[in-house]
Image (cartoon, rainbow, N blue to C red; front, top):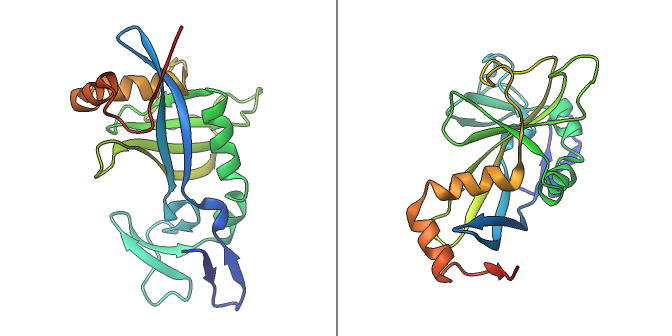
Length: 194
């Protein structure tokens, strides 16, 4: 979806949440590689369930998924304006990420933290998943929202890990992907000579 036209007659652009490709440096078996990843953005970045009160008859209703009925949310849409740019900054600068304890392959990045109140800031929630084409890795941006403190699914006293390390650990848990990577059968992957 490139645009959404609301019941207010306004058109809300969504091009800033387009699929984007990045290269990430990781290390497997003492060798470094640049690995291609494809970043996608969930509709959750610009929709809400409004505490599960959205109905299909809601004029802002947009879709239904495993979280329930979702309506277009102007506040989330506005806050997503620089999300693509911020995700690129997270990846390109190898910023810190927290692993969620209750979800498989779910991670959080705290953006613009408030030094006076730990955990207060904007969160980017994401996960990795292999594509139907096993030569690609997808990073799905599941949500982007502000919180006043760390979510309950981030264990206390956890330190963030650099983004590249998080991706590397995820890949290591998938032997088929490791084999393709180390054998040179993963298209777009570039071995780095050290």
